[in-house]
Length: 297
Image (cartoon, rainbow, N blue to C red; front, side, top):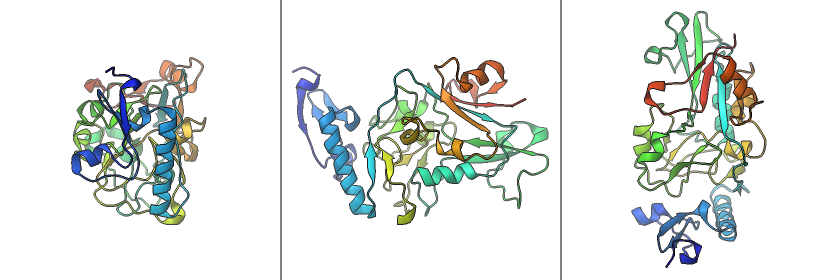
């Protein structure tokens, strides 16, 4: 029997990779059993994917009481997303942190933040060792300090995707490193492999007030998660694949954040890379981030 779709055996409704390994069945059809092993939900034929997404929407409505839509918008041809952040403009207001929380259905109790803003002494330069992620000034920016927000660096050579034992995380064609939460078994190998602290584990069932749930979600992005899975920034995949900026870019009051297509020679991202002094975090690790820091001057 071939390893193509002709070899499909069955779409097992209610059975997840997580269920296979833990004995707990989920509510949505999340993979196809083939002669060559399981395939991810996202790799299923369109009609089967459509049905599985509808099952997810039904589950989320029952769970949250909100009409949650789950999109399966594919990558845009000819686009690889990249990010740039002007350190000289960031004032440490943390509006990006909370815009990200609101947009991506992150737990409020316990709190999960995909963005961490580091406060540093200007005299020391970029010194991650002595940075302060817990600064609480009455007003920002503070005299003699500068700020560096850190989130998933969307690495081209991502160590997190290489260590996942179930294939629950991978890099999409548009450069976004994603997670299939139905395949994640919570082993946290990806957290250990990530040198940027960009992955976050749900130790408890996430709690979000009903009125604060964002109902517009993506199957590989901000759809509701459960306890026991690892989550991360996806460049707001539910927004950027529809021509919008990530929430953190949109909310930034100083214009510190830049976002665009790395393959477009006329894009702002390409201009920054080609004309500014650019820094990537932990360059020596050869993770090849698509997240660039620069000084505007």
